[in-house]
Image (cartoon, rainbow, N blue to C red; front, top):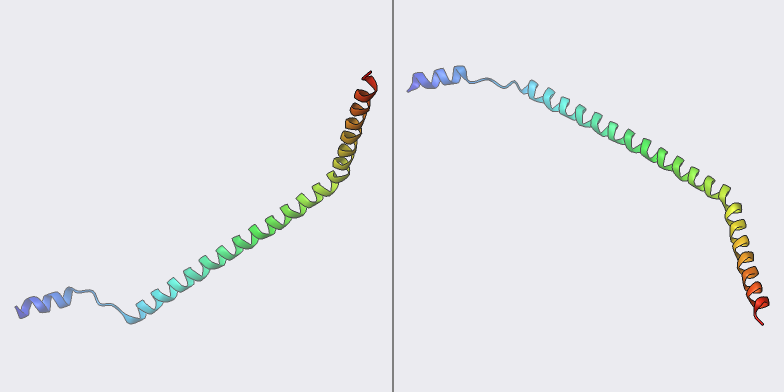
Length: 90
């Protein structure tokens, strides 16, 4: 039995504590890099959101006079129709 314990111990891989430390360090570096990429992507999305919001506001400002004019014309048209109905009734 002692023989098999010696053979088993000799064949068992040894784990170097330094390799464990460097493995943890590598994992930490990978996690840090992953977080940095995630943060960069989030920042890019925020910048794009801001650009889109500014573009939408600009388009709304450009269209506001046209929309106001359309509303006035619709009101005038409605008033004209009403006056014609009143004038055509005997």
